[in-house]
Image (cartoon, rainbow, N blue to C red; front, side):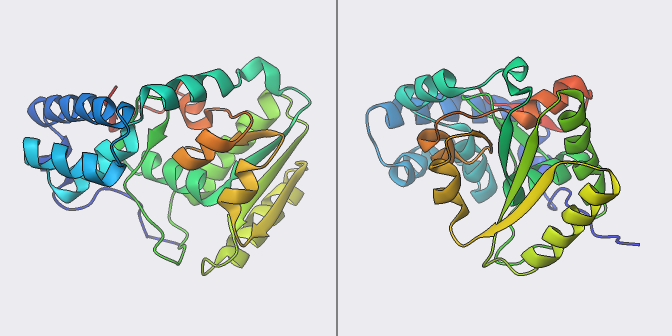
Length: 237
């Protein structure tokens, strides 16, 4: 059995587990929005805000993920697809982005709802993906969404350069065969560019992809509501 867990880092409770800390982070996100709207670079804006509120590295990572300019928020909202529009459609899913976010959620790690309504986590694959205890539970949640909403086809896109991408491709391919699901799994050298240029609905919480794709669906937000997946979620909007 795989005993790896995607969960919290040591010290995350001190950084995110109190109303005092979350209140400070919400103010920091408001300041980030102001600066990004006035075309400050994200790095410069996060340094200014981080210094003002004396934020730690992981707190800065959280507010960067949650922040966006007014224009970005409007643009993403206009392109967001509702659940009823997914029936009989082909959907492209940002594999590592969505899978790791769901693994983090299911393991009790902190995840953060940003100004665009998307949830993001603080995990990274750092060039190599490792399956964890929550991996197949996450895949099963995606299956439930796929079947319930009569999606025609789901195409998983994974980063080919990431170590073990071939293994997760095989794992999901076998799961799809066993459950008679119309899923495809592809490896792409530049999945962000591929998904951003896709004409079909995209599932991702990657900010650059959301800014450049033609339409997207907030799967993790949907699953949290539909499956009542309430754990360590922090709303920073």
